[in-house]
Image 1 (tube, rainbow, N blue to C red):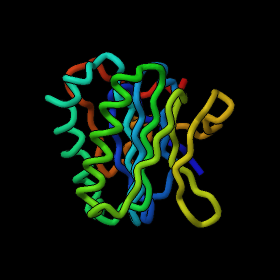
Image 2: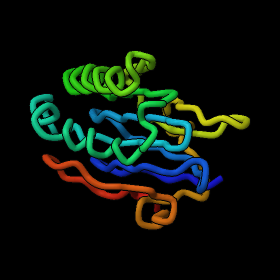
Image 3: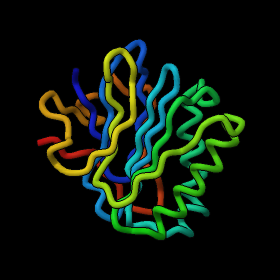
Image 4: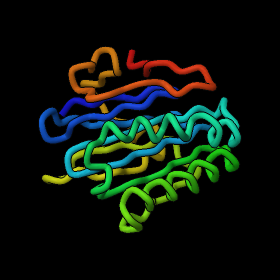
Length: 173
């Protein structure tokens, strides 16, 4: 199965039912990754450590909300994980915010899974079900057939970059 890597300060939504693909990001060092799975969609973002918790609250959080609205069944989300590198202040701000957002969207049905001090997050097919998994080191990164938001455009239902920090498509070379 091909995989689509999410770049710095980028977010991507893919349709898992009609165009299945693995979605992931790594190299989080001080950044934060968020992954969400619904019955039909997956969302992954790589939020730059170049923003502060205040910039998250004042700007990026609203853009995050707008991005997940592309998942028309967000209220039926089955899994959500927030993965942080080595920036505890940014990680905590995003984790608390995403937890509040997902509690509201799912009416307190979904528990957000935290993972601190990791290098990435991926949505992958295990058996016949999509799951969210932590990427702890480079050995966990998907191998072969790696696309980014440009080369994998056909898989993207929606994509974009958050304001407040420099963003870029993933380097897959």
